[in-house]
Figure 1 (cartoon, rainbow, N blue to C red):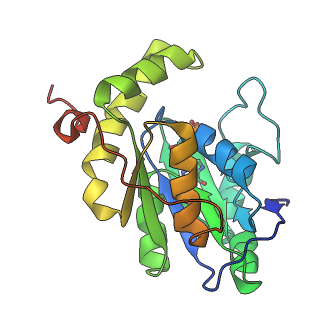
Figure 2: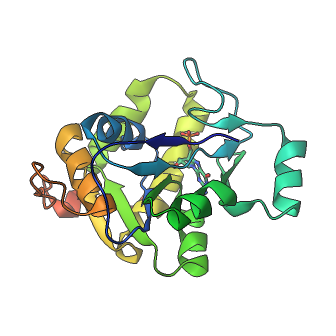
Figure 3: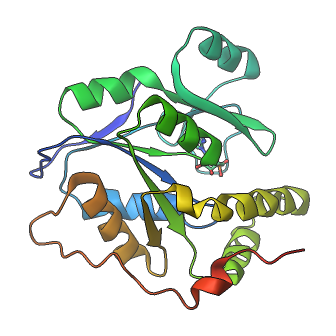
Length: 219
Ligand code: 5GP
């Protein structure tokens, strides 16, 4: 099973596991793509296993390992996941071996997973760093999820419901990065994953429009 590792000149004195979570539509994939572009650093990017069908443009083994439910259940039973969870009707899991291999070889590892998985990682590996990617406001999130056009309305509604819970869990996270701008969010995340990289300044504390507005509205 393959997983992406980017080689470069950066290094970390203290390899660690970083978990990036955040509500669906907040821009986790865009921030991670930008982070890879911003290298050079030595980071292991975990490739998750999912039972979800590929979206247009998604490549098996690169964006996800796409499997059926039988194979997913086999992997659960065999203890092959570091964490796994069901999200909006599909199963997702982080293969354990590549993450442990990366950390043992001194490479920081980055997982992009949802809240239940983040909690499982915290329980299994308390030293892991939990980072939440938050939208500048709730309206930004709704606009992005609807505008993405990859899900039908019922799925969008379900993902927004989950997003309310995910954002309410912000205090469980060690760090919050606000995705007001993809480039600075990626740079801030990179600093958290590998520590300060020469030539890249650190100004993670981007102000939100209004923190109160970021909280989901009561319905
Ligand atoms: P999507 O279907 O939009 O790619 O992902 C849905 C949600 O599943 C996102 O919040 C994403 O972070 C999360 N996810 C992706 N891979 C994993 C994984 O391996 N484990 C868990 N728990 N969540 C995952």
